[in-house]
Amino acid sequence: MKKISRKSFLTKGAAGLAGASLIGAGCSQEAVQGEQGSSPNIITQKKLEWTMVTTWGPNLPILGIGCKLFADWVREMSDGRLDIKVYGGGELVPAFEAFENVSNGNAQIGGGAPYYWAGKVAAAQFFATVPFGMNAQQMNAWIISGGGYELWKEVYEPFEVIPFPAGNTGLQMGGWFNKEINSLADIKGLKMRIPGLGGKVLTRAGGTAVNVPGQEIYTNLERGVIDATEWIGPYHDYIMGFHKIARYYYYPGWHEPGTNLEVFVNQYAYNELSSDLKAIIEAAAHKLNQWTLCEFEAQNAAHLSKILEEGDVELRSFPEDVLESLRNYTEEVLNEMAEDDPLSRKAYEAYKSFQGKAMSWAGYTERIFFDALQKKGA
Image (cartoon, rainbow, N blue to C red):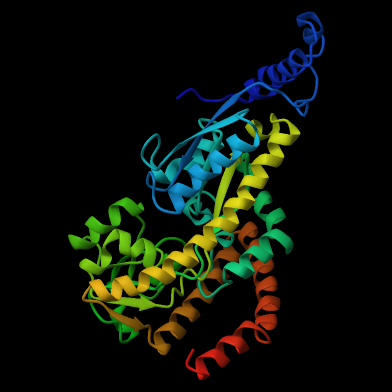
């Protein structure tokens, strides 16, 4: 794949976009040549072709399909002027190299989840999910209206990448196990597929966190390469067939209470877009953000019963003392991150401040409401 150079973005790209706009408006070639320095914000009829690389398996329900819907929406809203070709993880580049390839200009746009880039920028994890942290509603509020987005852009800026919120999984399940978790001792020595900060907390508790792409999880669990796995929730877990090879299905998903997903764009490619195409990218990302969470909520509700009906599965809650220990380990991990990395400290402080306010408000609203429903047996 040919790498997109910064020089190309700043010279040929700008000239081409401006030139196409002026020719389309009826200007002569000579006049166009005299306008080479014009702003790329002039609306152009020139067709642009972009490459999108993602972490998701090709056609993976909601996640992979969502990226293709995003491309369709952009194509439709731009009347075909911006055509995005979507590649699933491993089709063009390895799943966990999507961010790198967008950063270095090999692809213009990508899709994934911020915690996959923890090895490059630790602070990115706060814009995905935090164990025992905010739910989907609160994450959206922080990122869109609470100052989180500005901070997120700051975190990605050194990599010349611009992020956009593009979905949320909602509260996930705790995972699939072939042995009971009755105490913290059952965590020790456990090899579990679990990414992000949740993986660091599991390691602190004595387990071993393994991070593999979704398409490899079933085989690893079936063959005993891992002892347990989390994935997302009932819909995707059912599709993956985990109920056929694992006995215990634990909840809640303490590690991912509301995982924010993303579309991320190379800043040079984005800056060369006309103003209307920039707005279309943002609008399509917001549409995907809403659609994704709605799909997760609807499909998870429908598939939990399928899992319990079709598999020899026991639905279990993590014991309270296990959750309390994991919560304490989470605090240790986050505090250490804040001490070691100034950007993580800034993100953590902003996240924690907003979470405190959101939880206080929830204490008078959602928490009371759901407690009342539970008492009534709803």
